[in-house]
Image 1 (cartoon, helix red, strand yellow):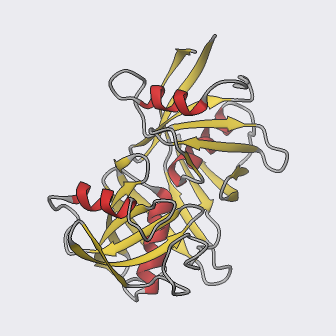
Image 2 (image 1 turned 90 degrees about the vertical axis):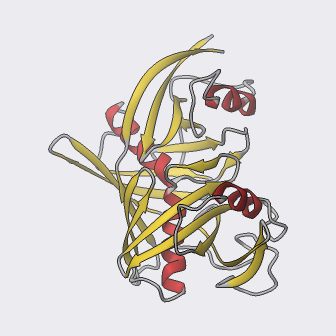
Amino acid sequence: MKIKFTKMHGLGNDYIYINCFKYKLDGVDLTNLAIKMSDRHFGVGSDGLVLIMPSKIADAKMKIFNPDGSEAQMCGNAIRCVSRYLYEAGIAQKERLSVETEGGIKTIELALENQTFSAKVNMGEPILDAKQIPTNFSKEKVIDELIYADGKEIHATCVSMGNPHCIAFVDDVNFEGFGRIGKALENHKMFPERINAELVKIIDKSHIQMRVWERGAGETLACGTGACASVVACVLNGKTERDVTVQLKGGGLNIEWRKEDNCVYMEGPAEFVFRGEWNL
């Protein structure tokens, strides 16, 4: 059996997308499929696999697998790509979409002007409760808590945006040993389901620079939920305003944590790379 796939990226955070409105993957080992397709030497190469599926409660459902085969609850860059795919494939050709994820239903507003594409996603309310994130901290919230990773002191702030994040502030994100600290934080004993790690440099009250280590994937060029969590952490620690431009390796995202509804809004691009065919 051969299936067609689409490669897309949001700021270099690249995924393989399969249209499960067309292909039924019942009986397929999805963990193994994600591992094989994501391999950058023997497969297509990506930060993971995304299935675009029918939903009874939204325009579509998004199911995400990391390159190690583990399942992720949510991905901000992937959901923007899903929204563009839904629109351009004619599955849901409207400028306001809803997508079901393991992190809840997300609404997306599409901006289609001058042959450019961007999407603004309501990522929902940040989860700050330490147990819900989840973490093993005894405190109700994890804000500027001291832990040790790779033998170094880390002042951690933890936020869930449908998936868990640990944010720490640094003077320079481009330091040697980032991978060691990222891996140590991902697998730290305080995080029972592992965690995504973001190291953040404050540029000014409305600009930050972020570098991300994603659980199950390692360092990626961008992370939408990580950018959202980082802005929440910045506000909680009194470092920025609520409307912030986040500079990642792959480009910039506009993030706003609104007071009126307590929701975080993310705006950024989504791009096609190529289409291909995979032999199951």
